[in-house]
Amino acid sequence: MIKGIAASRGIGIGSICVITEHDLTYDSSKIEDTTAEKQRFNDAVEAFKTETAAMADDIRKRIGPKEAEILQGHLVMISDPAMSGEMIKMIDYGQRAEYAVGAVCDMFIGMFSKMDDDMMRQRASDIGDIKVSLLKILLGIKDVDISKVAPGTILVAKDLTPSMTSQIVKENVAGIITEVGGKTSHSAILARALEIPAVLSVPDITSKVKDKDTAIVDGTEGNVYINPEGDVLSQYIIKREDFIRKQAELKNFLGKETVTADGQSLELFCNIGTPKDAKKALECDGEGIGLFRSEFLFMDNNHLPSEEEQFNAYKEAAQIMGGKTVIIRTLDIGGDKDIPYLNMKKEENPFLGYRAVRYCLGNKDTYKTQLKAMVRASAFGKIKIMVPLVTCVEEIRAVKEMVSEIKKELDNEGQKYDNDLEVGCMIETPAASLIADILAKEADFFSIGTNDLTQYTMSVDRGNSDVAYLYSPFQPSVLRSIKHIIECGNKEGITVGMCGEAAADHLMIPLLISFGLKEFSVNPVLVLTARCIISKWSKSEADALTEKIMAIDNEADIVKALKEVAKE
Ligand code: PEP
Ligand code: MG
Image (tube, rainbow, N blue to C red):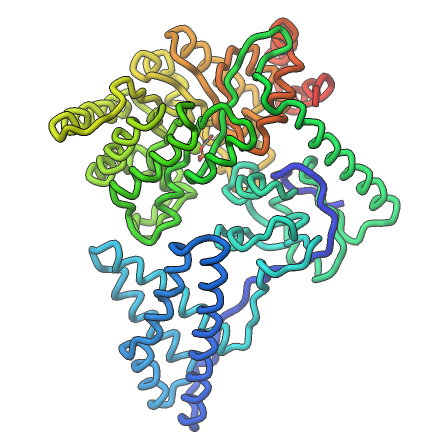
């Protein structure tokens, strides 16, 4: 058995497909036969065009025309004589095709990445993609087509990039194992959204397995078995059936209210990344949106989305939710979330750097465009604005000030908006937690981001597997912080929610009920699980447990004590 991080629940049993990272180094020595080399180059370009056109077609059908446009752009660029002509010239001078592709692409990447215009800068990353694809063809490297893997496949990769994830056909992938990533990395969040069992941070797994090995992925416990013995396999087949049966039983909670065992009503919201996910939230019986990660709109684009594009996205989410709360978080970039066309400076310490609200308040034009789109969209539903990574009261004040200015502007323009639009803050830094009493007087609501609150409180990079043993919301320090935030919010009479992954943790839920949390925001696929667990705890029972837990001085004993009384 190999241990990793339990990132997406469930049991996957299947046949391994390893996604390897390829070495793209090439021979730079000169050649004699330039005619043959040019032919090799032209054949590679033709193969690139055929592959790219087929991929664009597939993406258009499976995902949408906008996503396919990027690949169409690659076809236009490679057909531009300025690019292929330069490559041919270098081959005429005796350079190998690989060298010509590498050198010319690097020259264009250097040129485009220095330009001021965002669209032009995006070209640099497009040319980077073209370079990699052409080199792979020239070097005879074949990538696995993730969208075409057979049913029952266990994907094994170093990391799962968003572009790999977009190719996954849920019905065919039984499990995911990666070498990097933690419980709250974006690959983990995506695996959960796709309901595929996943174990991350399994050291050197790509070199320990080969295609067609049998694997068991226990995404609930974080265990992986390669070519397991017959008795282990049969045990896990039973466990998988048990998990599937329990999931089916959860359907009994569809359409029910979210109430504790003693009848206290709580709100059970969803975390989403795109307006379309709001449909999924409704299908899963979410009662609102507690976190709309607006940065996906920026990350899935090759340009800064305009006010109109953003307005349409926020309005769409509000309309889909039909009057139910939609909390939209303003742009949360930096740290682990990069947007290539913004060309943000590389930082020594990105998690402590120019990110989230700090970046937004330093780039007021971009921020104002986003806030204005949100305020305008508030006329179409119950939108709330949420500010990430707040560390001092000035930040929330500055955002509120901008929102007031925007409202005046909209009045002058005769445009509608919700005058009661709330502006709240995420509490995800120790600084914000320590001044939660002050922030509660300024913010209209709180939402606790335990993914970052754990990272910053424990001083552990949330994606670093070497320190993952410290990354736990059950650390006494994190629990004390959560309790304090909820108490401060409740004292001031504002709603306190939680949108970090801990809100759906069956061990955490009784503690949150006892602390007085009012709104739980979880991955849509976990709505019914959370509702089921909430229904099993009464306030008095949760209080008794919490008193015991808060007196324990270390994480391991806290988790042990919680597991002893866990209700699933
Ligand atoms: C959090 O930090 O808990 C959170 C919800 O935000 P993200 O995971 O996007 O940083
Ligand atoms: Mg966060």
